[in-house]
Image 1 (cartoon, helix red, strand yellow):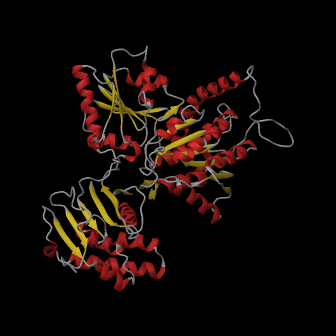
Image 2 (cartoon, chains in turn green, red):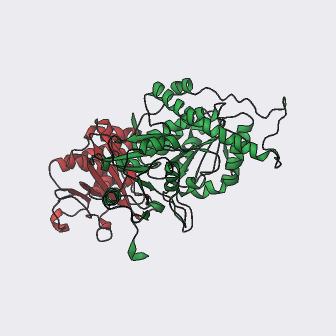
Image 3 (cartoon, each protein chain N blue to C red):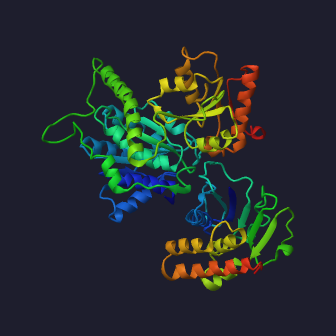
Length: 387
Length: 183
């Protein structure tokens, strides 16, 4: 174990995965990841084509092309950069190319913010990428290695993004176990695609699909996502056997036994929550690790004995509510009765989340447990004086 | 768990100080976490960095609101930044200034230790970069990190003569503060 910056840990994990092509455009707070990778390549520590590009649209396009010829490809971005990649995200998943990226979570403009929230990747929820949200730096490092195994398995063949909170995880120094090259090689075999572009066997990727075929392409993507559920679990177990570390599969429960109130969330806020919840006997945490595929059955099972569920997130859909809140409610409907659900939006644009905010959410949940539901969802930490 | 907040100006190595102290504390067998106050830092503008040191793995991710220790790298921040904010009762404030604690006249239930780190850094390192000198003062005043670990980590980070000079500055600050002197 050594104390390193989150971005360095991620870059180290990428290096151990031996990508053939890295294509990225620097953008705060993702910059340190690609700076470290560029340094590894320049120093000869990583044999890889590092392609500096003119934009994120190009970055993902290069990763697409590289993956299509059978190369292992990596990219990283955040916020506006991820937004600029948008159409290529759908191309990559539609072509069933197992590109892996670190999606650093940052607010979307306007107003301009370089700080953390999760609006960017939640917006990419439906792009056909596997999305795994990580809780700490060690998980950001480990999930990256797992992601290639999941994405490149022939029963899945889907791209994956590891979503990590900007600054809070990318710019923090804490103790991390950095993977050894040899153990990573043992865990992650070289990419061996069934289909790839070669002059020996001409193929077409991303072809023109007329209405008589398009839906079948989409359906097959859905089936691959369904298979990814099992693959994510399998790879988490195998990773634990190989590396001795485990973060849950699609979900991870904390203090759920006997919990009357369960906080459901994803990302780095779980660390602060754990500090609060350890003093509360009847409050548990349900971490949504895989947001897509969504852990429908696991969520139902984990919440079946709860009385109040508080979904906590750093994103929202203007004119409705938080996206995770909607998804959790949808998964439970028709399956779990007598359960009150509350949504909380906080931490937008880097607003710090002090422990008191978590305590407030637990208090609100207790009021609902005793007196019934009034408001279904609310913002936490709004400054009334500047509204 | 103990928490430190470092105040400085962009370019003075406040984030590096937090990072090096985190590495040193971990080397002493403790858990640690260091992070900057996230922002668009500019050279000369007031900045903050945070450090947590504990016997258990550190999970909390919020900023530090009630520090046990506050370290101020630049006395020109007095009157500009509320660096005493949230400082715990019986906490310790370490300031780089030629003045004595009495001359500063700060009110509160905390201890104040002053060190003329700029003079030490200029004399030994040859530049008014005070972060390493302040680390020596922190080690002596708080006992949260060992002098040897801080020096080892600094020497690994800055090799050769630069590392040696910084190590001397750290030791000078440590010795002065350990004796209970303000310099």
